Image 1 (cartoon, one colour):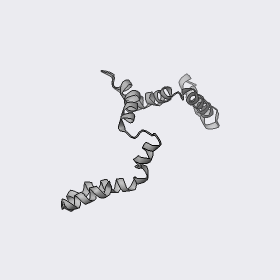
Image 2 (spheres, rainbow, N blue to C red):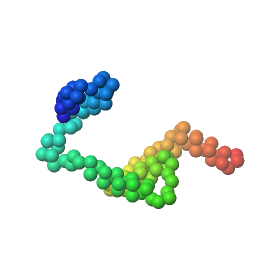
Image 3 (cartoon, rainbow, N blue to C red):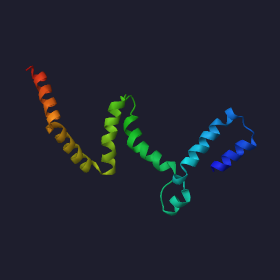
Image 4 (cartoon, rainbow, N blue to C red):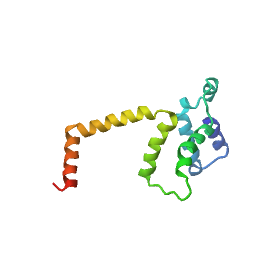
Length: 126
């Protein structure tokens, strides 16, 4: 495909400036060639259409974040999506075990425990 695009640009006698986008596209396609073997993907039964990806994005992102009147900060949206993905794919129990272990580690290491104690002292006015 990259060769065909390059050939069409040559036939059209595009100037160097006009050809910039074509050259970027050709470099991208050439560099990603190992990942663009659609015949192999189809033979293996793998989905290659954007519809599968768009459906997943709609399910994970749009259905939750595109609620009328909702406003999301980047941090808030990211936090919701980090929980929504493992909930949706059935990995939440494993994710939650990992989260609890990391939080336990953070709170019980010397630096983490010291930080929690000093924050508690500050909050309690000590």
